[in-house]
Length: 111
Length: 114
Image (tube, rainbow over all chains, first blue to last red; front, top):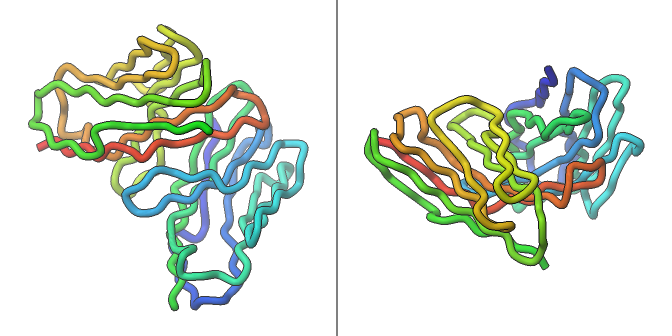
């Protein structure tokens, strides 16, 4: 059974810092991995999707990498801003199954 | 462009009462549809998914049920709510279940069972 963990559970940084969020999964047989952002009381917003054949994806200040063999993904946020404050969730899609979500990392960027 | 709607946004119900949450998608046809629950301090749990009208798959046995009466409409129901049904319910859609298919989420419904 696929399990997804995220470290750290919470993170607080000053504005302007670069930061890395980590996601680990137990089974490397995946179709893709997706990073989402969730603001308090809101739905999830898709940030980046990395297919199993890809190593990384970039969107603006965000860069996500995937290392299937080690069961890891990282989300790199450059020059963090207070507006980046949210919970970030990682989800993997095992082959032939639906997405499995991690518990999320709650990020606070302090002005 | 595609949009996904959920209603109501907030709901407070007594234990033992019925439930009906609705989700509709606009701007696409034959989407895959999903119901998730997010309990306080816990991750997202997939409850049901549907690949077509009348086709429902349940991921977790419980007192909830789902129906898809129209292509872009997904309904979550219960005949008698339990306290443990409280949570944040999210509907999502995707074009398919391939490697490049993203899931798009609705705004959610906050359910409190008293």
